[in-house]
Structures are given as C-alpha cells and as structure tokens.
Image (cartoon, rainbow, N blue to C red):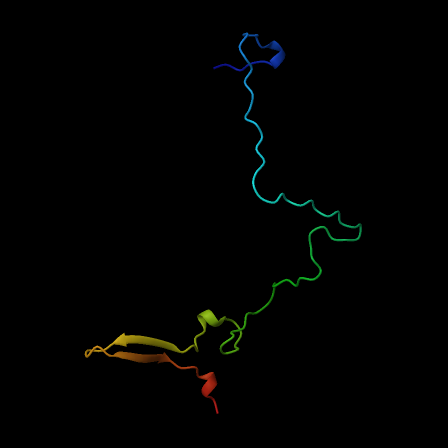
Length: 102
C-alpha cells in the first residue's frame, strides 16, 4: 500500500459510495449541560468541602490517633473452634485494655 493524495485526485470507479453506519442514540438519560460559573466563582473547588490533608485518623473503638477501627491493636478478637468432643469453644485472643482502666 502506498499513500494517497487528497480526495480531489482520486479516480472515479463508477461504483456506489460507501457510507458509515446510521447514528443510533444511546440508551439512558442524556448528560446535562454544565452551569456557567460566575466571574468570582472558582471553576473547580467547592467552598463547602474541607480537605483531609494533614488530618490524623482516630479509632472509633479505642479513640487513639494513628489508626482506624480495622487495624485497632486493642480490639477484642474472638476465635470459635471445635474441641475434641465436638463442642464449640470461644477463645478471647486479646482484650480492650482501655475499657478496663479503673
């Protein structure tokens, strides 16, 4: 194959023209038009949102900073196993020390 010049230099073959497929409108609600922002309005930032930059996470279980409840070192971990007779046994692996301070 070699490159071809503009369409005005193409040879006429006498065959019928090839057209693209007809346009089909996609299903669903069409996207809305964006509102035109004011002259003193920031184009991207929202003044009602606060950034999380510099924020220290606190645990909802023990209240300590630096971790969340998923990785809490003070969480009660319970293990349910079967013993030799076939009974279920609960093992408490660690206790919440902050709840038992007097």
